[in-house]
Image (cartoon, rainbow, N blue to C red; front, top):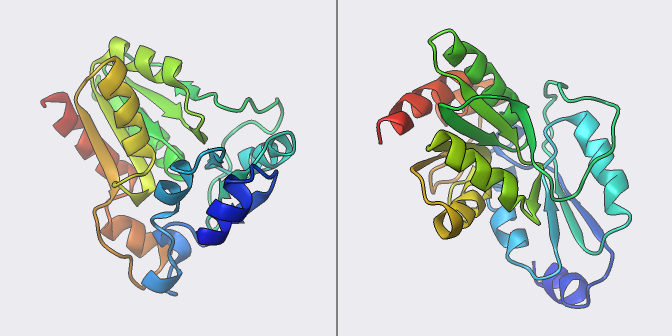
Length: 224
């Protein structure tokens, strides 16, 4: 972090950093190989742009878009994940994407957890709960306008990420809303602990980052 801070961010050099082995889904390699704090480190550095692509298509778009920017951190995992975003179309830096409309609750995700959020929203709709799903691939600069509008429209927010809840995407969302439109927020992620060994499926289930966990969080958040 010292080299990134002093050599790249402080000097505002157009260096692109791709962080792999992010999240618990790295699997059997265990806690020492699972980066769960990187977003918190990177988004606090002046000049640093921070991205978390939801799938391979978005990773390609972000990589191409980063060429025109200064310092960038692009967060990638290692496990194969569903590809569900459109391959065509340009990527707009600092823009959140509303993937599903809804006015009962807002679910905001980044990385592969956006797919889990979409699955949860489809299930919730069968129970007459219409969730707005937002993909937030740019953590910094963050899309304040879209986040505030969602908070105003739905009145309650759930965030999900494969990162510590301390200092991550959920914290960034909470900071924006606390200053511009406070609403109840429930942040899903790693709860101030290290990861451990296991298959990606086992770990995502154990740490509560599946679609069924999002559903439970939505029900809880709605009554906050």
